[in-house]
Amino acid sequence: MSEVPVYRNYINGEFMAEPSSTIDVFNPANGQLLSRVPEANAGEVEQAVSAAKHAQKSWAAKPANERAGYLRKIANKIRENADRLARVITEEQGKVLGLARVEVDFTADYMDYMAEWARRIEGEVITSDRPGENIFLFHKPVGVVAGILPWNFPFFLIARKMAPALVTGNTIVIKPSEETPNNCFEFTKLVAETDLPEGVFNVVCGTGGNVGSTLTTHTGVDLISFTGSVETGARIMAAAAPNITKLNLELGGKAPAIVMADADLDLAVNAIKSSRVINSGQVCNCAERVYVHSSVADEFVSKITTAMAATTYGDPITQPDVDMGPLVNKIGLDKVAAMVETAKRQGGVVTTGGAIADLGQGFHYQPTVIAGCNGEMEIMNKEIFGAVLPIQIVDDLDEAIAYANASEYGLTSSIYTRDLSQAMRAINQLDFGETYVNRENFEAMQGFHAGVRKSGIGGADGKHGLYEYMHTHVAYIQS
Image (cartoon, rainbow, N blue to C red; front, top):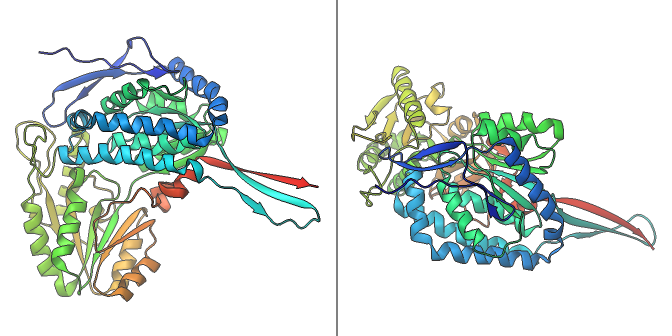
């Protein structure tokens, strides 16, 4: 049996000594021990932040297009290692190999996309009330960014935080999730093969209660960019408050999918299924609840039940053609199982699935449809993070929108209809950061992925995501 690799933190352009305290990383599909990763101490976090702070001024002084050149080098390294990286992601996170490869390719493309913004960062000239005065508005880097990553799309989220931070002149300290850190360390090895200046990119691994809390309370951190749960986001806000540290938070969702009477039901079923089973339902913008018009409810429930029942699942390494892998850990599996049992007690009717899958190993839950739901049920209000689809019947669009908006979340939403006026009314009245019309829930890198209410503060991607990593500086020049 091959020796289990032990990864090391990366600070100021160097991999640190082998850690004295480690965390075991397991394959959620079969329980295999994959690696040991550092549980960094406060001193190592301090060292990483100090390195980033020291490097930031000289990094920001480089022309933006020179900074972008480093992102392009890293993107090329990613493409050269795409198959290996995809396998690493699948082994530690459980997503199917095809989706892991999409994540790797999308990450490389994202690095290149953000590099393109180097020549597009713009300021403003503002009209003055005073004769002979010119007012200029500049966009400048915030300084040191702490990027705290989730486990569901761990590789892409490195780039989503790193690329806009670096191209705008910031330096960064990344904390990968302790559930899925291997891909980040493999990414870091590729960064180390380039000539990226020391201290610009740093990685410290550990638990949220240890490394995360040290980063979020650090006076040397100028922006905290976090993707994860509402509960953790709230703790980060509280921890950052004494320093008034700028925050960028994506905190989950409970995406409604509205299916109207005139919808193409086959299209709706395929898109909603895709949006529910992707990554085993562990995506913040997944379709989490359905509001279907009463006139087509029976047909829709029948079709979506058939589609979900046909979903294949298992170990994506040994069964590369499955549609879905395991949940990331036993905590997630138990949470999904408990929510389904609660839904049953509250009157929900399971039309397919509804139980932990007996595959002998791994954290697998059957793809599940629950009909007969209502707005008072937990499963229509709390994020599931598993391939479980609750369905509620409505009589018109107004009722669907009212139920959709009655949520503490506000990230993504969708509607299926052939009527443009209905689609536009939904877009105008749905109180969400994104609305998808007649398509699956999956954002574009040139858009702006952001939510309202408890789904977060700020956003990512596109021009608006880029400017999240900058602050304004206005100069008044009297001639």
